Structures are given as structure tokens and as C-alpha cells.
View 1 (tube, rainbow, N blue to C red):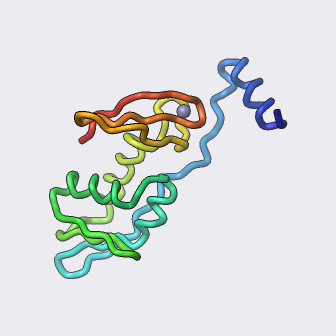
View 2: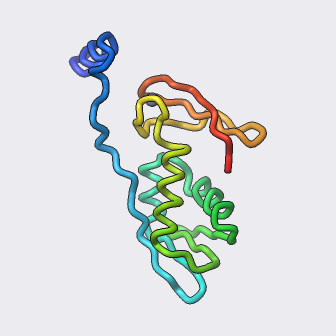
Length: 135
Ligand SMILES: [Zn+2]
């Protein structure tokens, strides 16, 4: 056990002390309007922070915005006009639903499975396992 693990363990044994500040920030969407399309320029950065496939985020936005979404190497394009505010709200919601652990509020989660409209999320930080209803 290294020092950090010892510290983690000490915190585990002392409920109440484990409420550490989360230094994680949901990324801001860097978007621009191009004719009738909306481009998200930093989709790779958002996906990296989320540790999810860009395709997962594209799928989520397709549903949320009820508009076709395409991905290329650099960017994500939405086939309608969407304000930066709306995009930031959607991405925030995505993180709150699928990325940030409901128990410890850390973003160290992964998807363990998707079944009948529910996504099972597992947290690598605290071991929590729960399901989220897909939107
Ligand atoms: Zn957790």
C-alpha cells in the first residue's frame, strides 16, 4: 500500500472525512454555427474527459436535439442550429447522468452494460454500481 492508498483507507474508516473537493470540471462546449449546422469543435476533448466514445456522445445528442449528428476526425456536426447555452446544458446533463458517480461524485466511471433502455454504470473510485434510465 502506498501513501495515497493508506490515506484513502483512513478516510474510508472515518465517514464524514471523505467529502473531498472534486477538482473535476465538466468541459465547456466550443461550438459555432455554420449555416444551418452547429459544429462542436472540441468533441474529442469532451470525450476524453468523459472517457467515453465520441460516438456515445453523438448518439446522446442526436436523441436530445432530435437532429442528425455526424462525426469526423476533428468535430461533431449537428444538422440544425443549437445555441451554445443549450449545448452546454445537454453536455452537463450527460455528465451528470452518465459520467459523474452518484455516490462519490467522481468522474471515474465506465459503462458496464446497456440493457432494455438502462445503462449500468460502475464507479472505479468507490465501487458503486447503479443503473440509469436512458433518455
Ligand atoms: Zn463513486
